[in-house]
Image (cartoon, rainbow, N blue to C red; front, side, top):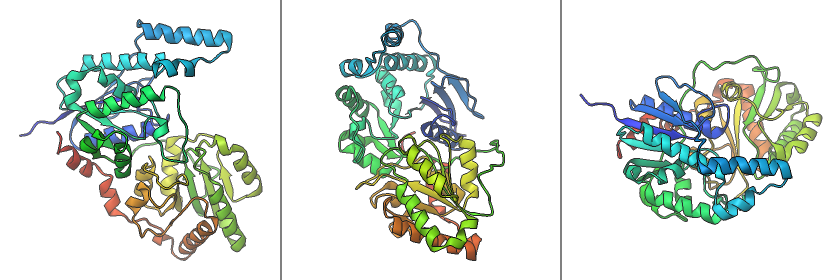
Length: 415
């Protein structure tokens, strides 16, 4: 009788309503449980969170370290003088005092709770990678370390049109080179991201596994009827943050072309744009005033609400930046596959989403090709009018690829 393998997950956050990164973290953690591993989670979420059948331990912030006092002194100075010195300090030290204190807090908790686990997985969110930094200070554990890299790092390594160079980028690049050379294993949500990061950190090409965002089904989520959604209408949904390179203008202009060609559809069609869109806020508000068939949320919409909607709408939309490559696997991709509704993919031809959907996937074009977008909406609308049951993604291969079964087969090679 074989015993369960023990996995220690060090996660920056497991609050699914906080960020898309936290959602992906929880999905992976739940998938590990379904693979019949014994899972312990150390998390730096600033509140107590429980996950079913998983030992979750909240990491406490160290409050007696030099970096803690320096971070508080910086806050007091900035509040009193109205001068922000964060960038200047990061250009000197690479990261903020808070970052270093958080890293120390995570490292101390790891030393305390490590119990000869078979594998240690570090999960981050956004652009911090605090758990990865913490692990660098624990060389005795590097032989069991799998560093999960969800996005390019630092920011200046993002493909165009992303062009932000952050403070302390040289030190950040050195930090991540150490991660690539120290972790026995690395993992990426997409094949293209592994290849992309391997250009800058060649060791990742040797140690890298591809572990996609998991199709971990969430149950017992609270849900109330929504006044902006009518299940009897042909509804297209884009849910997620609209960063500057992810312009919604091509989509909305294409939607307008479709409505102009099919005015009779106005009474039974709706386009939902949910999530933060600060850069496009005024543009979206102007569209919202003039297009009755468009609904734009006022900022953030909860994960529960979006997750339920993805299963009820007619079409789910994925928007990616206009670029020659998009190596990212969108965090919502597994949920869109699970929803089993056609995905309208607006992005570059060379992208992980397109790689998975396939070169011959029909409902694809670039984000600024409004005419083509209108044609695709029209085609999907006609199918909806004719036989709603035909509006299905029907990709069992992707369901398997994003499943715990596939995850277990990958992890068996290292655990």
